[in-house]
Length: 169
Image 1: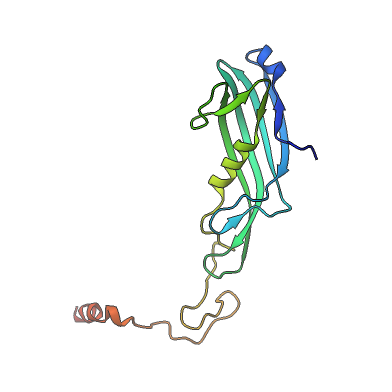
Image 2: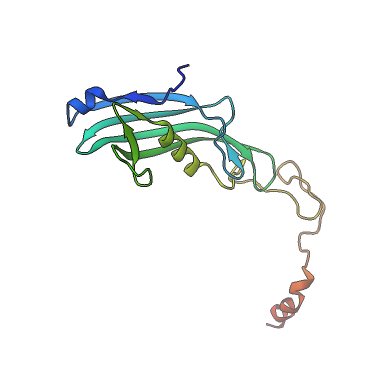
């Protein structure tokens, strides 16, 4: 694997405004994580974009894909998924790197674009399945594996005064 797999030469693009160059680059995604989700250490992040020479820079439009893993927010079991997000970003000379990405000389680096896209799309609170039943708050049993014998109508004493009002109607 090349030392900088996301580095793309745009010499030909800069010489012919309006032309499009298709690029697919993949590289390691280790270290990309948010609160409860991360890209596995052995997983690659792939960027597939069309690079178009526009006035003032290079426009990148396409997709960033990878796999993610984490801990389910309801049952604490493993959660995994596929990430695919659309990107449309401008690379330009003299970029402030807040609004656009930097175009340095005859090369542009798709790595910051890939990193930002993945970090913005990783789930903050992943689920193992949309229908996950979670853990029982009383005994801690995983409700996805088996039901528990806990009383499901446990009354919180802090709300007891309001329950009296409900029964008066």
